[in-house]
Length: 209
Image (cartoon, rainbow, N blue to C red; front, side, top):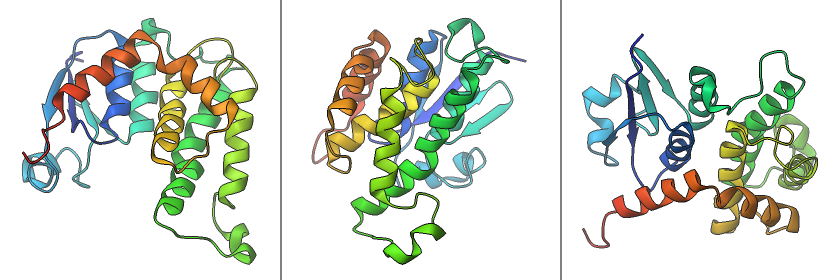
């Protein structure tokens, strides 16, 4: 299979998560910039992602969408980058657990909070995240057990969970608990994270453009 990597994104989107992951890999990739409502809905891109959303990657003939899936896929596709615990390792459990907790309950809870949607207390057992408070408490637990999500080594799970925490605190959907601030400060200063932010910030269209 070809190792060519194509990255479909917009600098003001969840594509920033995938960009960080790609920069952590250190593998060459080509960026295809798309615009909301136009090229993202073009038939050519809908053939890549029928949702018409970014990010997406094409690795040879393989297409992957959804930021968490992209992080998990790339970590396995490029094992030399050391961004996933080895298969059979006890750290593989928390690695998957917290990455997909962030992609499921955290994403849903914080999105609902941002839009002012509250689950009635008597129905909290019917929704995956229960309540925002429960979800945030569990997230705090996740970042407080070790230096990184899956132990003492940085992994793709930290890219995804960390991005959710960084954005949540930035946009006010996640309270700035000391555990979150300490964890975010630790991972946001990584060279690949800084490089990814600089690349995307330079691509943000000027206001009024």
